[in-house]
Length: 368
Image 1 (cartoon, one colour):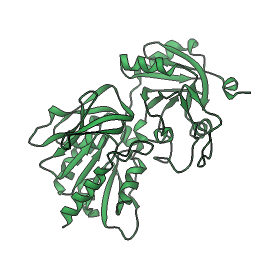
Image 2: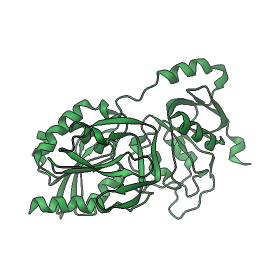
Image 3: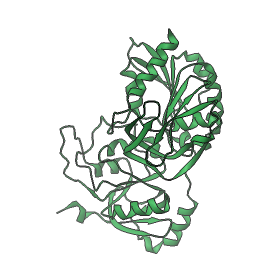
Image 4: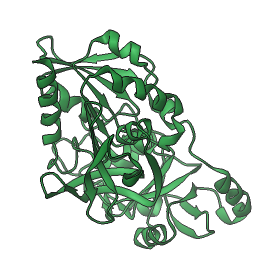
């Protein structure tokens, strides 16, 4: 018998009152989160373990998810941080030489509540038109508790995201014969950022989000990496104040995603929440200096307001070819550059991996 017939009924209720009826996958119960969509055709395991999705219910727009199963090597963090998971159809017979299990069992093990067999195209259109909104996935009868659920949905807000996902102590990675030492701020970092640095000869010291400039200085790094992470960047007031001092250390800085936003805020710019964000592996970005368009992987709901930055402090280096939003900054008064997209994309395009080489070149120049 098909697993889709055996699974119990599940519901998705949106803040506008829309109800989708489907079938349960993963854990059972009820969960509230911000409903977003991602357009990646592959990389669902990387999505599920990316801390940037903390507090969010993730919808996969690609209709079939799980066809190559899951494995222990492709995790971007120690566990899944999504609040819930939505797919059109999941594959219960995956086939891949690296496969060690199926996605349904993975979700159960991670205690993630999911729903399948709903019209994800219709759901995506709603989010595109109305913007991201809160919602609930439940295996209870949603009609019996609809008003109660709607009240909780409207009260829900993602809070203390970075504080929740960051580590609480320093961790060191890399070989003894390293050429460079890089401090990686853990705002909810993806492992492949660390891997890209290690592969280029770096000893990487992963530090908690609230690490001070003085503590960074004591580690004597050759470079500083500001990682991706979840939530509203402006919420991280302590980190923003600290980055003002970190910039004064005259150590080369490279920021990705949330790191890009936080450094911009530390230097006087503003951020804004996008209508439905950029999530997927097919986002076109124009490098203004190279006058070239790259395909990038992205996962963010906020963006830096490019013209809010003092042009004497930094200039916009990259823009999104779809909506013109800021995708990168190059700083004039500090040794730093940042991008909104993910050049380390695992399960995504590698077009912009050259930025890690540029970071190493900055370090080399400063060292010599």
